[in-house]
Image 1: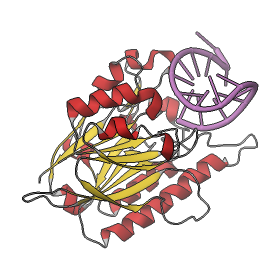
Image 2: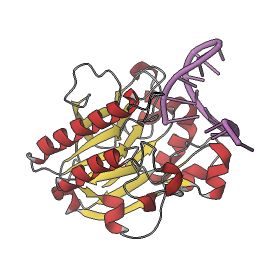
Image 3: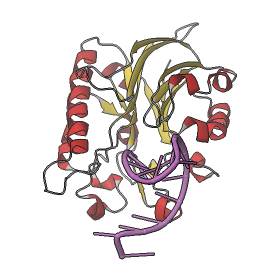
Length: 269
DNA sequence: ATGGTTGCGTAGCAA
């Protein structure tokens, strides 16, 4: 079962790119982030026509996440637990159930983790955007811990806005104080791994520099000035089925591209 | 170089 994640940076602006990617790559499940629209404005029919069921948590102008599935899907969560007052559309979780012989269910979450920049205010204290990111990550660790008690196969896929280590950054010295690389951010990402989750791409590519995001600015794509911030984290039951993982750079090179490119895994049936 | 680009929405914020 192919499961992919892609921050599309506006589903409306990106619809032709998303349609051709779905038709060509044909993932069983696609987790999308940064839809930048409310649920009613999601181009539902255009995606359904490609054979996908759709689950959306939308928000005007900012954020927004979706799960597209070729298989039957039941939405389990539309917000990350742990903060009733959090109104940002950054989390959706569903159970995907392949029909037919031998298809086992997989729980899938589409995650748009807060960017967290700027990290500091003018007076030098932690900026609320940074503290929101860290608190959101604490909630994610707690939720992952709860999910692990269920002992089922699950995949937490999305834009984590975290470069796990310096090898995931084209110029680590420039990002030392960036929320994507700060020790506090990385410590929480490692906490997820220390629970027993497997970061799929790095597990199968233990060495080497790979990116999933290139800034629109300053010719970053042409210069390969990228970051690896989009990840799929697997429960032990999902990791046991991990057959392949990859980063598909093709969509990033097209006209009207998102600044992110899809990351994918293949799980044994 | 405190720059650069894209999207939303139509000014300025977010990334």
